[in-house]
Image (tube, rainbow over all chains, first blue to last red; front, side):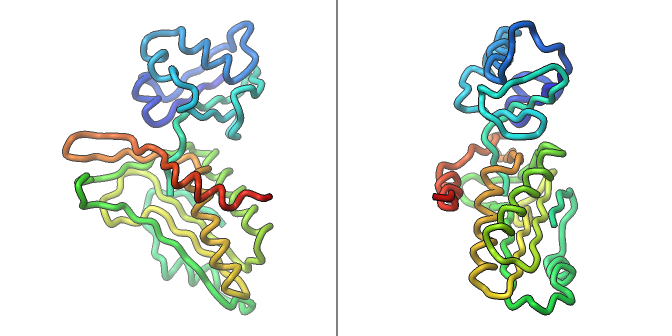
Length: 83
Length: 149
């Protein structure tokens, strides 16, 4: 699957984009974030408060209980500030 | 019609191109968002990042929703990204309708919704360094005014 990080998440995590295999036992966007947090201090810091984050699966805004599957594009970002 | 681009836009030309020949139009409303400088913050520049692909999709969905709710003859959203200086234009929203009430309401709706739904993020450069702009509760409140009962 493809993972994308935007705004300050990208800075804290240290990359804008990565490809990885969906970890075993991870079935939702929320579970994916919990798993990502275990990958190092940058991830743990950036993803510590899920309420400060939003998630899109295949370019559609979804909730944390949304199902993720291999091949999905999952983007994690702070609340948007355009306009 | 929606467009996401780095370069500036010409407001007169955009409105002319959007409305030319559409004689059923009786009123055109527009909103232009610009980079606010000056003040205590001393913002030197603002860099807009976005999520290519999703941005266009979200703006298109917002425009479709506006056309469902109001009777519009034409509409346009142009949103810029990249590094912008104080005073530069960020976004243009134009709505044209037979009657002004539809044009005004749809324009305000489009601005309120795009601020809370379109995947853009602003990075401000100040004399103290760079900082990501945080979302405003007032923007959420403005967007919620348009929630359907």
